[in-house]
Every structure is written in structure tokens, then in C-alpha cells.
Length: 346
Ligand SMILES: NC(=O)c1ccc[n+]([C@@H]2O[C@H](COP(=O)([O-])OP(=O)(O)OC[C@H]3O[C@@H](n4cnc5c(N)ncnc54)[C@H](O)[C@@H]3O)[C@@H](O)[C@H]2O)c1
Image 1 (cartoon, rainbow, N blue to C red):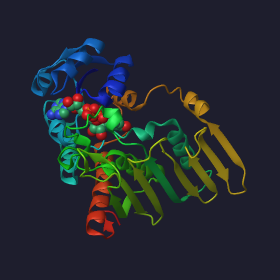
Image 2 (cartoon, helix red, strand yellow):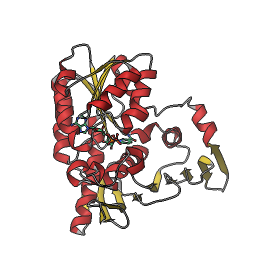
Image 3 (spheres, protein in one colour):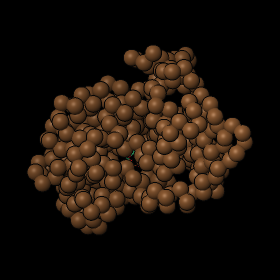
């Protein structure tokens, strides 16, 4: 497999380029960024060509797969162009800025016969994978409720934001959402995946409480609190924050008939399984990460594997679209101050 990476910012530099480079089944075909210095820097480090345009990359017949790592507003048009050029696509989350865009992308992926995967990387976190195995084993019985949170200090340090210019993460036209799209989409996917149920209805409050750019409050939400009802009737909550300073939060609690799974609830543990009789099994972070041999995100290797071995795509365009539908419903719920039901889900 030969990969072309589109967008050479933080996720390309910190995760995608090194992990594609390290994968023995993948060759780096090249990079494209609107800022040519960025594509040149990654090509110098990892090999491949620094393309002058997306069209030039897509015209390279040697490149069979493309990873879209640009700002959210370009995901749809660049994915459609790559599929039309006959490339497999890995698209960063959130897959799209709107449900309409996501529907176009999913339809194009289906019609193309190519692989399209969405980088909902929380599924590859070893503690989340272990939780999924336990839930599927039936050992704890049926899921009866959940709560999940994702909080950090915002995307500025990660993406090297310099005060004074318009930061796409804070621009409704560049990102579509604030914390909802950036981190809420991860948790929307995680709860769908762990519970095995679609989100049927949401009730969300969003607020811009603290974050400023150019001396003014940012024009997207920096916090969101969401109640979710799943298709089978169970309910749960999702708390998202870009203003959680000092230490990140990434915890999830899944309550089942016969006990609970607690993920990243304490800083020294990946997970605890507490049985209904009070018995507690503790899984330290190092142990659980090592038991999966995990030294990278897992998402890149999963994409390479499904292309190289022609196996089913593990996180499909439909999965990406379902997560976008959840955050779009949250946005509408907050704007219209009412609960919003998701289309096509009971
Ligand atoms: N899966 C995850 O956990 C995860 C983590 C962080 C970011 N992301 C996602 O990755 C994507 C990129 O985020 P980032 O943090 O790297 O942002 P970033 O701002 O650091 O990088 C974006 C890059 O895209 C380039 N770009 C902008 N317009 C372009 C265009 N039309 N064509 C090509 N390149 C273009 C920019 O010059 C920049 O280099 C976002 O969708 C984000 O949500 C995913």
C-alpha cells in the first residue's frame, strides 16, 4: 500500500506520518498541504514527494490510498475527490461538518467500491478494547446506563495556535463545531460502539464559558453537557470540555446488570471492573497497554490492514456519519432548547 497524506499539521506530524512510516506493509507516497513548507518538512523526514496540489497527488497512479488530515471543512470535498480518483480513504474525525456532507461521503464510498475508514481512534484505546470484549462476553450482563467525559485545555497548544490569526478550530466555518465536534464526536462514537446501540435522542446544553481568541469569546462552544437516550431505551450522559485545565479527563463508566466497568476514572489505572458483590478487578495502565502490544494509536495499522488484506473496514463511513448525526443533533438541541430525535432511529 502507498499512502498520500493530505494536511500536514499536528495529527499528521504526531500520529499519522510516523505510524504509516513504521508500518511494514505501507510505503509513504507523499504529502500535500496548502502550506508547502509543511508538506516539504514531512517529505524530508519520511520520504515521498511534496505535492504542489491535491490534484497532483491524486493523479499519481502509484498512490492507492489517501489520508485526509486537513481542517474539518475540507474533509468532504477532499474525500469525494480521492474516492473519485480511485483511492482508498482514511478520513480524520469528525468525518464531516454536517449530516448532508456525511451522507454524500458515505454514498460515494459505497459507490466507489474502495475502502473508506473514519479515524474514530478511541475504539483502539486498549482499555476501551478490553471493555468491549468484557461487554461482548456477557459476563456483566446487559448495559443499563453509562456516563462519559472528555476534557482538556483546548486545541491551541496541540495545533500550535498563535493568538492574532483566525484559528480554524475556533471558526464555525472551519470546524463546524467547537468541543462538540472535536471531542464530542469521539465519545458519540465510543458510546455507540460500547453499547452496540444507536443514539435515538439527545438533549444538550452548550456554552462558551472561558476561551477567548483575539480578545473575544470564541464563536464556538468550549463546553457541552449532553443527555442521550439510546434506541433500546437506556440513558447516559456525555460531558465535554475545552476548559479543563491542569489535567485531562477521559473517563467512562458503563453500568451493567452485574457490575460496572470504570475506564480512566483514576490517573493510575486504565480500568477497574467492579462486580455487583463489590469484588474489584484492577487493570493498571501499563499492564493493559502492554497486553495489547500497543505503542501507537492502532487506527493507522487498522486502516493499512483492511486495505492490504482486503478485509472489512473496521470503522466505516456509516459509523463516521452516525457520530456526526449525534453531534449535529446536540448542536440543534442546544440552539433550539429542546430534545432532538435522530432521523431513522426509534
Ligand atoms: N483522531 C484524533 O484523535 C484526532 C486528534 C487531533 C486532530 N484530529 C483531526 O485531524 C484534523 C486535523 O487536525 P490538526 O490538529 O492536525 O490541525 P492542524 O491545524 O494542526 O493541521 C491542519 C493542516 O491542514 C492544512 N490545510 C488546511 N487547509 C488545507 C487544504 N485545503 N488542503 C490541504 N491541507 C490543508 C493546514 O495548513 C494544516 O497544516 C482535524 O479534522 C482534527 O479533528 C483527530
